[in-house]
Length: 309
Ligand SMILES: NC(=O)c1ccc[n+]([C@@H]2O[C@H](COP(=O)([O-])OP(=O)(O)OC[C@H]3O[C@@H](n4cnc5c(N)ncnc54)[C@H](OP(=O)(O)O)[C@@H]3O)[C@@H](O)[C@H]2O)c1
Image 1 (cartoon, helix red, strand yellow):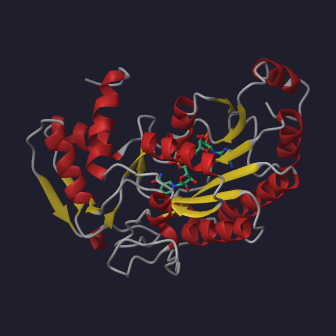
Image 2 (cartoon, protein in one colour):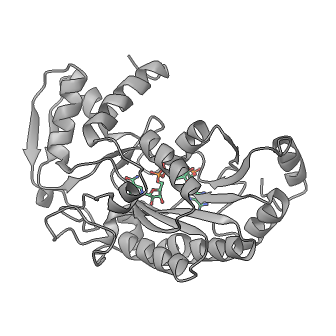
């Protein structure tokens, strides 16, 4: 159902009976991050049409949604972020991750509505050898990274009420819509099944729990300090060390074989060291928990939410 179609009005009417709270239009509400924004931004009235109801690339439907909903804040948590498929489909990558984001940012600027959009550590080449800060020069090595960087720059050039927030290695209770699984769950499942577990040890990131990111985004929006931010769980860790910590915290004794990323034949190149430092966020008084705390909270939440034992 598109918002432009006849039954769109009932979708709108159903969701529009609370005029007190900050009104938020969330694109990508069924994803890893989007699902946690719906849960965590409970002080807001979050309207989250599905991908089918409101495709990011459909400029006319977006205009209609903005006109009808009159949001105070629009959050874009949608992207074409299958990194390997982006190599084969660069037109689609730029259409979704850059041009559609720019169009939405423009529509928000026209209405003086706050715009929040997510970007990625993949805007960097990963050769710096330390966590990236916001002023480091981006140098994407994949179509995905280039398309996200283009999206960032198109938004930031407007100097409007917009937040561009780069995150890294996102995982959540809701599996990635792109991958269909969560990295941590897959490692745990393989270990429990007694299968061999192999994880790269020469790629370093700041794996980020979607709940922590959703909370930080809410705090960031409240600051009205618009601009470019890094927002990832604090610290840098190899994927092998992260997987080892996941098994240790889950109480599972199982070996994890360290493999080199070169043995992983993928169409897209990925940065070797793409941890992010959250300097600007910290200067606003917003502290991100460590990657280990993210893992602890994730393992607890997946049990308390009844998703696993
Ligand atoms: N995942 C990571 O490791 C990672 C790392 C760094 C940055 N990021 C960025 O963080 C953001 C959130 O990522 P995520 O992992 O939460 O994504 P996700 O789990 O793949 O969820 C994406 C959401 O967007 C929807 N969507 C996809 N394409 C759309 C389109 N063209 N129009 C409207 N809705 C669309 C999806 O709906 P359907 O499932 O129905 O298609 C889903 O609800 C993205 O900007 C991504 O680039 C992610």
